[in-house]
Length: 230
Image (tube, rainbow, N blue to C red; front, side, top):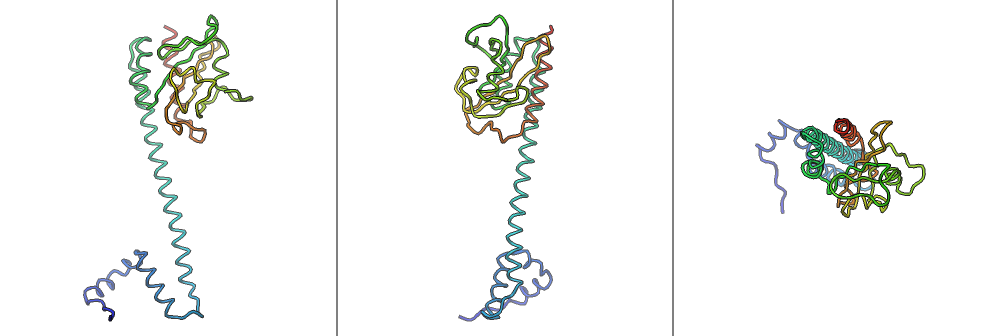
């Protein structure tokens, strides 16, 4: 079978735009391969090796670029979600409506299966008083939930993790992963905690960033204080 030569039109098109070959990896690989076969086994053409190395580097750069784009999109999506959640917090006209909104619109916006406001009280003893989005608990419950049996665990930072048996009873439903947002309500009030839970094991994990949830927790705390002061 004889090799077919390029038609005059094809040849002229390549002469007019040689970059069309340079931008095509398969064509360049075939050209370099044909050249290396022509020079024989005793000659090493470093250009072919360099091209292979450059291709490998380009593949890594493209993969890194795709990762950066995906992370940027995820961050933008997360920011939009938090903005919608904060706007939802501002809509209720009374505290009862505020609590009801937590279990309806707010939980849907945040894509969580449980959303509970845990507040300590000195008059509460024994097991937590479940029922609805507000759970009243005895003193020390918040710090124990955050620590989850670990010593030296900071009690003021947002915590993302697999669901713990220590905090499982506060959700009101089985969850696989959870987010714990401590709420400092001031020197004259006992600690509180905003607790989120998800059926997805990877929904909340220690490897994820907490900046957006920290911002949401601050907004939630300020709005909650407004209702508590009334």
